[in-house]
Length: 243
Image (tube, rainbow, N blue to C red; front, side, top):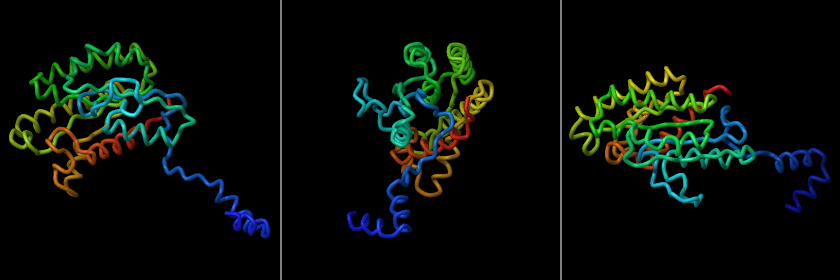
């Protein structure tokens, strides 16, 4: 370092190169327009979002170990000056009705600027009629927009791959989740939400590696599968215009 510095002093051209190298940014992450300064980003859903998150204030575990963690760590590290606040309130086993029961405490009271929801697979597993799923989800979104008028919504569609019990009962999971994805798409349009289409992402990934490489039991992603979710979430949310 001393020799480089001395050489730069002796040659103006080298000095310019040295100065540029010493000040050049190495941040490869492009900013997301809706991640304004002090933005609060909340992830809601079931076990896929929960990711075995901690229930204390311990920041080492608070985001869990899934796609929400990947997104939070990537943008939190890239833009510390923005003071972004990422929160995870996913709860394993939740259906839409379970979200509604804890919505005031775990969503409205947190006053997020961006709310991402991934829900539906447990409604399918419990046999909740699609019409009820859509009706209850619709009310949840309407109540949220009324309480937080400036909120930006991100709806993630439920997904599966033919592994384990899903492969053994495709009529229950493949067809059932398809109708729920259609419901989520309708709700995204109605509530002006960004729609993260994940089934197509996982289907395409299966051309590169077997289904169980991405989703180990047909429902819950592996760490590789979680990164697929994070990447698609980022791609879609990056396209949102500033408020």
